[in-house]
Image 1 (cartoon, rainbow, N blue to C red):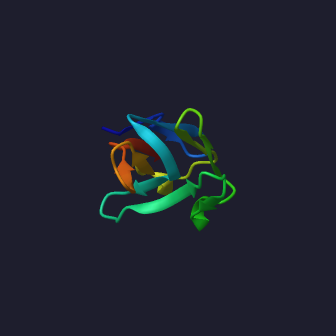
Image 2 (spheres, helix red, strand yellow; image 1 turned 90 degrees about the horizontal axis):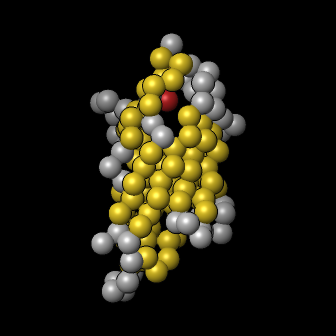
Image 3 (cartoon, rainbow, N blue to C red; image 1 turned 180 degrees about the vertical axis):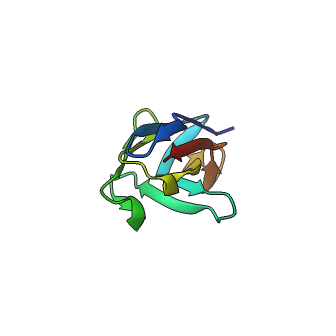
Length: 121
């Protein structure tokens, strides 16, 4: 059974930084795209950033220049460095990965449990 475990959320003042990390574990054959989504109260979950297995990155416009996504394929981890945080970045952040698990004939979307990021003014 595959599991994604996030860490690194918390409370920070506007202008501050946080780093989120997600580790995938289990009987993993390979991982395609890994990424981070977020969901603020009353809003839909949306993409923050993702990165392919080849290292191609994609960011939502509002975080470009402030957030950096990276991954370590050998360790099955993906990280999100968040700098110059703004109050509107407050949300629950979820790790997502498309994982091919042993015994499965295809890759499936997997989600972490979510980690709260709160940015105060």
